[in-house]
Image 1 (cartoon, rainbow, N blue to C red):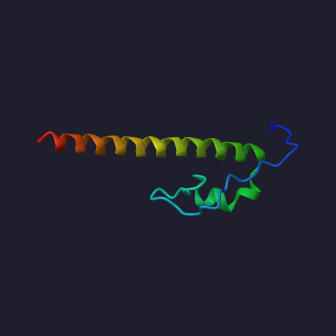
Image 2: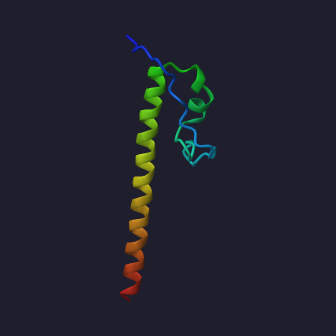
Image 3: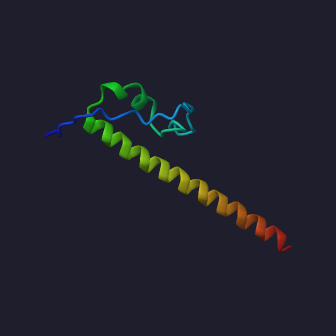
Length: 81
């Protein structure tokens, strides 16, 4: 059973509109289809998309942090020799 919604869930778009190598928008982390069909989604589907976007953003930031840490370690190792 779907919950009654009094207000529409707004689009998470931040007007970046560029895709990364995995096909997710760099601004909101939605897929192309999620962006295209946003207005036709139910409130429950929109909440599911927003949850997926938060997970994708977290995962992307975690990957960036790991990459940065590896670069720092490589540079530190180079200065030892």
